[in-house]
Length: 135
Image (cartoon, rainbow, N blue to C red; front, side, top):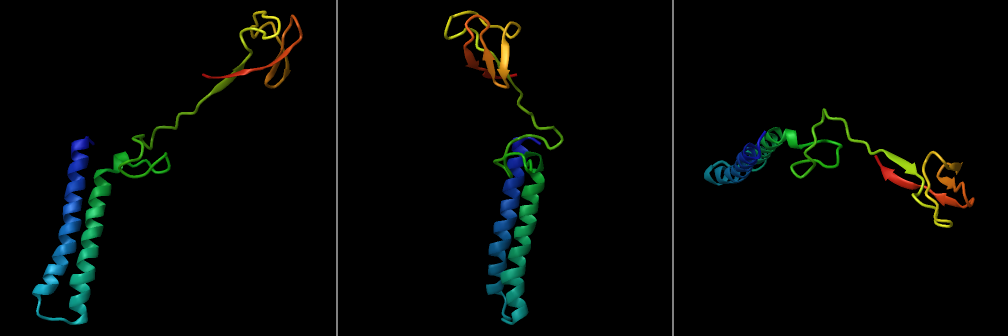
């Protein structure tokens, strides 16, 4: 849905919510009867019903922009679709380009791994931490 249609549904929903809220109070003061049913109908039931209808219109009109559980909810949440899988980041650990002790060039083929994230220089024997890089 385009942003113009989303804005239009928000405006329509707000008009219904505000109109029902104030309309219930205006109708209450117009009516002559002041029994408990009249009070509940015009002061509670009509404003609550208009709020629910207006909120339903707003939510239904903006359902494409509401990714539940994906970093936000509502109109200000992310614009990701629910049927798209979340993008996962992948990382690899590479040896540094050069040995900081002897200055020799290091490559992933000619080095010895001495730990899960540590490499050993084949020339001087110095150990170095790997560099984390996103793939």
